[in-house]
Structure formats: C-alpha cells, structure tokens
Image (cartoon, rainbow, N blue to C red; front, side, top):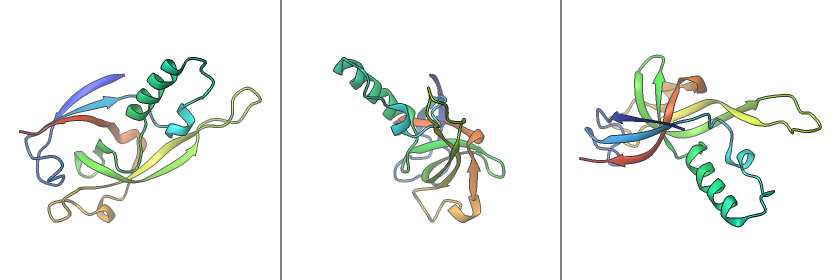
Length: 138
C-alpha cells in the first residue's frame, strides 16, 4: 500500500473538504469490488476482521472520495457516483473470474462550484491516483 498527501484547491468539495485541506490518499491496486476481495475461508476470526478492515479501506465504492488525473481537468478530487466493471481474467477451474473497475463517474459535493458530472464524463480507471482515507481540514 502506497500513501500520498495532496492539498485541496478550490471549493468543489465544500463542505466535506475545504480549500487548503490536506488529504491522505491510498494508492493501491484496489480496482476490484469488495465482495471479490473478501473470503470466508479464514479459520481465525481476527484474521477475517483485519482482512475486512483492509478490504474496506482498499476497495472503491460509490460515495468514496478519490483523486484522479483527469485528461481535461488535471488533478482533481471528487466523489464517486458510478463504477463500471469489466472482467479481469478468464475463468479457470482453480480461480473464478474476477471483476475489476474500468471506469468511474465523479462529481463534486458543491454543485455550484464544481464541474458537472456530465462535463467530466467517464474517467478511465488508469487515471486514478488514490482513494482518500483521511482528511485534515484547516
């Protein structure tokens, strides 16, 4: 898991994130839905609890705040409104097919100060910088 700190610039995520706030991003290969990450094959509850905690932090869901390098708008921090999935690999007897996130729809919390969801369009998953896991407002 890689971590990165970014500074919020602008009011598009107000009141959740103020301009000048710092966010801690988790940069990880979490482009699978949480149901594909979790398994109940662990024998020890403590291991399963830790795995669930990490899976929740490292998976993307609608409503999460993420930073992306948008092709038109550059580095932006927005909230996920939709996720599009594709198949990652062919199914085998040993390993079932897993889905991975291919594209995201994003929007700002402050619709007056933010670029519209329609104008941003779908953002390819490879433009994802990270998921916000902690914020520090000024």
